[in-house]
Image (cartoon, rainbow, N blue to C red):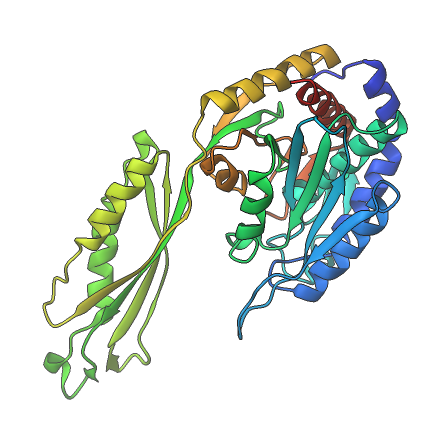
Length: 390
């Protein structure tokens, strides 16, 4: 683990660590899965009550949905700054991957300096750190730059409803600081992320009675199995390109030759050109059994967050700020996507992984390292201050 820095700012924030921990516990114990609008709304109310003393400019965005899908509100909190100062966007999300009721089997717990609970690491810890960073800054007077905090309710499912809002606010910002979890035991920033694409290959066969008319049938399941092998062969993991046929379904009964099957494929890629090549290859797929038909649905969800000159410049500012606080800040490239992919794709300078230090995202063992929370809050303070002077 990183050594414990002793800068005055971190010492001041260390004194608030018990309150940080209790705040994180309140957030974790308010479950907020992506698909539960009411739970998300309750989470947003909780966060709003904590930020209300810091800003009166708080807005809940009702996001578009459709007949079968509804989303909780996105939360936007604006902070004023000097007239000609830069504007920054702090970006995060309130949703988790854990369904309501997870706390009954995976409750909040503190053990050996680690804070466990569903969503603690990804990414309620990052929200808490931002809260205490802004409190610390505002305690010394007005912020040195204009700042917007945006927390969306659907990041864990690809941000289908909030994407337009995120992109609109990002276009008005000079830089985007993403409060997603850091990488690894040393809390590295994320200076690149793979892009994400999701495809569904729909296979239509010919139904038949498995006993009486077997030869008349054309099994969509058998065809899908052959297509899975072809899809897997497109992976080039050494170059960061992976295709994972993660879900497969089909058929109605064991005594019926299946006339429909579907394969859902997760694609991760480092560059836009890799995504284009994969799309072309998937559209070239042809059925082995000519009686079957293939239909490909889907495409790129989030483009890659590539390690650009702008991102490196932001990272170096953050690393310098960390050094002034007394600790080393590394950088990392990761496979998972975030809303930072969206803002980076717009050409907005973006730095990710400024959230909590911990591990186990999306698992029952998810945790935050408690003693690192003041350090990460202090880092955010220093980085915002540095960017205000640019």
